[in-house]
Length: 202
Length: 202
Image (cartoon, rainbow over all chains, first blue to last red; front, side):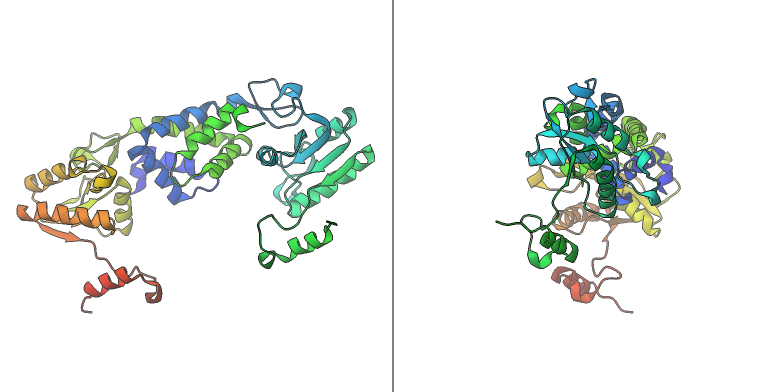
């Protein structure tokens, strides 16, 4: 009695398996949970997933996700924020991460990825042109590059800095160093090197 | 800019958070993945979850999940199997686990849980009555108890054995011992005790 005698269950398992962090076993567990423990959750997931794409769009200015509004100056991210600083992030979810810190009062710009030629992502696939336009048009004083501290993120940051500096704007990058609450003993060599390079007077 | 300014995203995150093995961070990652990386998957999940309950029912005989068929002798689990042996499992997913071993040729009976009075699960909440009826009516020779080897599973096995033995049927339980491929050094005391108790001539 293989699973292919249960087409509805199999289809549902395959759908959940496409999601990040869910493997074959996890997907199976979820589907049996929906069937035997929490049938209501299946309806909740179905309806929220069905309308997700329709209800969420992209702001044409900052390229962050927007809901219900027209985007631009009215979008939830751009509205009522200091327009002299733009924080450049890789993904929409990174906007929420920066917002959780609660320190940043400026606007955002979502790149929609980083330059990774081996994965087929070239500069023209990102929202780099739109970022340069924003910096040229608006009275932007500083661009903060908040990309992930890895090869692709560092490379993209250098690429962006080269394009942005000639526009007469200050280009900065998030500090790299020891994460708060960590132990020096367990820090990797590169992080320690960066934290030494970036040391500051106290 | 808190997440409550994104009601559609928030609803979707809450729906995924109800699933087993998915926490708040995982649910957020899934929703952003659906929005920015794999919009097609959202539709696939929505449609498969929407029809899941309708397409999957319970076999009135073995209480295993069935699709499309009327259940009973025609259900995917009961059909063409040796009716002299019944393997009693806790959940529908356990049927697939036993089937993966590929050894068992008899029929199944899904208890739909184990006796756990502290969680409000009493014997009458399970399919024990239906199991006794099956054993009385059909020419069942052996009932294999394949419940999880923990307190609730062991207790339920003893309870079932007491009810089944007077019906003149052989009642057995899956062997407990060292799992294949494991190391004796890392085995817990109870497992080692059980494997000693259950030792057999070679």
